[in-house]
Structures are given as structure tokens and as C-alpha cells.
Image: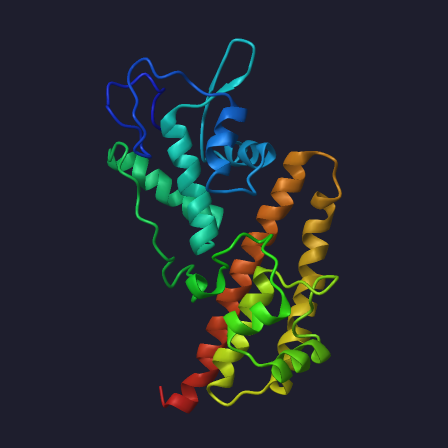
Amino acid sequence: MNGPAASTSPEAADGSPRSSATPLMSIGEVLAQLRVEFPDVTISKLRFLEAEGLVEPQRTPAGYRKFSWDDVARLRFVLTAQRDQYLPLRVIRDQLAEWDSSGAGRQRPNLVAVGPGGEVPGREAAEPAESPEVRLGRAELISRSGVDESTLAELERLGVLVPDPPGWYDADALIIAQAVAGLAAYGLEPRHLRGYRTAADREVGLFAQLVAPLARQSDPAARARAAETARELVALSQQLHAALVRVGLRSTLGR
């Protein structure tokens, strides 16, 4: 990994001015830096990423973490890769390892979609651009997604889309509605999507068994690991589903 902040380079990896006198930062200061772009990041998340070997802050004699601007750049890279491309940690770790071994200095590795051995097809379209905490009214959801009122009502009746009380819609609801609008352009109707809801519920039940033991622990690091496990399970599920559909369509396509 990159060394401490006492570099003579005029800029940090994120373009911030720096010099050999640039002080190291506490974990709280790093959190304040990152929350401007990643409002949902927590200290537990940063500790989890450290435990996973994605960043290695220095330690004071008393054991306190001290981060350089290069450490902040690595964390920003990891969080961006997860948010924008939903890459699993193992893929991000490999990219960072290649970055370190190439001697590329502070030039960031490219964010690339994972290839046939581990891609997440269509992730760019599936990931919300807004914060997961976004709240949309019914009229705004209809306007932004392209579905009409009757379609939205049918989606809710079938349980494909469920608003949060007292009637707000989050970023995932927008993704669902946009996907439904896209499928409708090919002739699929809401009634055709009931199986998606059923399949999703089955996966939720299966994955919940895997992450619940971690999520129930009082240790913040364990809860952070539960969230990361859920994230990677979803990514792997998307890979499996897309591959199965492609295989199933081969005979139709004459391949």
C-alpha cells in the first residue's frame, strides 16, 4: 500500500493540495471528508474496510488510527466502486492489489465492470443514482419512471412494488418502476411480473438465513460485515440469474 502522508507530491490522490507537512487524520476526520460524497458511510464501515485489508492506516503508540490523503483516496475508490458498479469486495481488492503492484503511484485504477468470470450485468442501470434515503411522492415516481397510474396501482396490488408508510417511494421503488416501464415497451404487463416477486421473496428468505446471525450481533463490525455479505449475495444472484436467462434463450436465438 501507499506510504504515509509525508510525501513531497504536490497533490493527494483526490487532487487535494498537500505537502510534507500535511498532517495525518483521525478516523472521525476521514468520515467527515467522505460523508460529503457518501452520506451513508459510518465509522463501522471504515473499520470493516480496514479489517478486510482494503486500507491500512498508521497507528499511534496508543493504538489510534491515523489516515493519510492516500488512504482517503483508497477509501473513496472502494466506496465509489461499490456504489456506482456494485463490485464485490474481492474484485475491488484485486484491482487495488494490481494498482499497488504496478507501481502506478497515486493514479487511480479504472473502475471496470467485472468480466465473464464475475460481471454484474446491467449494474449501471440497476443502481440508484440517488441516496437510498430518497423519498418520492406518487406523482413524482410516475413522472420519473414512465409508468402510468393504473400500472403503478397494479404493481402495488401484485406486491411487485410496495411503498413505505405513509406512501413514500425510495430509490429501489424507482428502479422497479423504471424497469417495469422498460419491459412494458416490449409488451410485458404487470401480471407477467408476479413470478419476479415470488422469486425475490425466496431469495430474501434464503439470504436472510446467511446474514441474520451477523446482523443480530451487537458488534458494529459484525453488522457491517452482514451488510457487505448481503451486497455480495445480491451481486452474485444477479450474475446467476442473467447467465441462466442467457443460456435459456440460446435455442430461441439459434445459438
